[in-house]
Length: 102
Image (cartoon, rainbow, N blue to C red):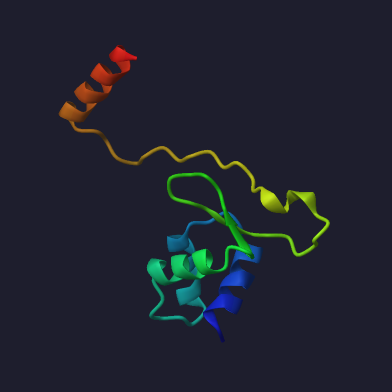
């Protein structure tokens, strides 16, 4: 099966994931050598079908097929996830200094 078709089906069933998350889902369906880069290429080559949100690591959606649907130019706002890492002491100091200058 073609990666484009499989990816389209997966995005329709599970909208709002990252390219990395979609590549993992594709691996489960039989695309053993697929990676994030190939998934991103497919998304960006087919922007008439896929749309991404504005987050730093984009989350992808399928545009509605109905030409009369006014929601096709937008996608839901998804809150950004907090980083799961702890900052180093020097990073905390730099952030504090930056915030005090604003």
